[in-house]
Image (cartoon, rainbow over all chains, first blue to last red; front, top):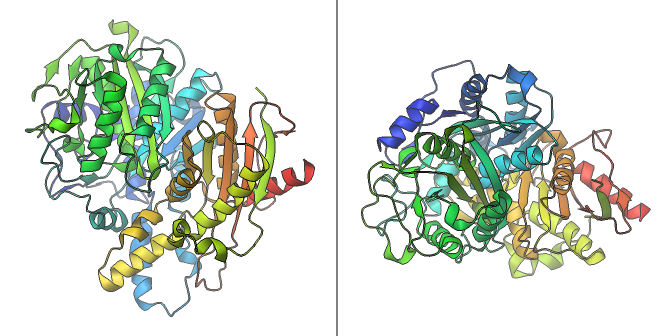
Length: 368
Length: 199
């Protein structure tokens, strides 16, 4: 695994900061200063650095060792493009857009990432908004489980931009303070940038950090930005993930929720979780107060935390949760690091457009 | 596992004015409308179980116009318009289609520049071969950006229905590069036309 986040630019630092409850959010945003100037774009830089850490940890020999690449991003390299486009808009004669501004921010990111690794194999760049990361990992799981490939590199990359910051602000979804997921005083999300990569292999391995046991997808078919009030799509994703992992709800020890801190998302998510597990029947947390909401990369960064939680046998609380919303019927871990026997944990995401994803991670058999 | 193409449909340049009179479409982007036309035609040809069918939207430029309009208005007037933002994300079209058709199965947006169409078809094959779903609608769409200068973009939308169950369809070929000049949604539009002619 590998990460670059505002709360740590490698996995050990990320876990340490998360476990100590130290937020990387400043003035409501999770920004990262990229020191290496060698990258053409920040999102690319985040991704390459995170992928390097992951591939080194996996002991892979670069592009020779992954048969398939699954990427996730919402806005790709938009930061390179939007400034020029906005400036052009101020002076453009009516009716023109030059070809240089006909940009493909996602395709370009994929091309540059593959170029950085000299990789020309099968690639999927998934852009299902905030569920892109879990969807990419879920697709890789299905491909490996069915025997189509034996190894896959999965990663998400995201950069803060005028589009997303001003966009979420005009939807009144941003919080100027650190987000408070599931809190009765929650007022919005913290956008952040970063990247996370995971190396997946088929079969048993003494080097396995954890197992990806199941993946599910579900769609709300309700609204362009608001979730289904009853969490229909997420309920479907949760059910599918549990079915795929052949586990019952009572075998899940912890749910690392999407938990953005937005009033509607937290409410819808809590309904879906309650429908599957029952009221206050499973520990539920959100770690977004630590690292923010990295859109397409967030599901993967939080999957890293799921794996680390299984390795350390420790649950992460929701930092800053002081008044749990009584309407949400969720059970939260104590506001301090909690040692627990963790066998299986579940990660959820919900995105604009009504796309939802769920993943089940299980303890490495070596550690059982 | 074999994968089958059972139906294809595409936007043929017909007038979309009647649709624009309907409330659901007044605020829709051109990508949303063109892709809707293609999928609606597909829906009329073959029964689709929208509760379980996967929906893949492949697009090279995504919602370029909505993004441009949002950013230009922001720069000119310091006003960020919520509708433009919600329409600007690559995933907006699949969100619109899933709502219009009540598509509750897995949905994906795929973008890979000139090969977006091929990647969408490859993903659909993967979803079917790995057993995630038994039906998959793949839509390729890239809309014309208004007020375009000399560098004109073509536009189009095509949709194909693929299944893992043989039901009078065509065996689905492996997709390497289905068109001579692959571009955005073009691959799917061409495939949709071939499927229409053959079935």
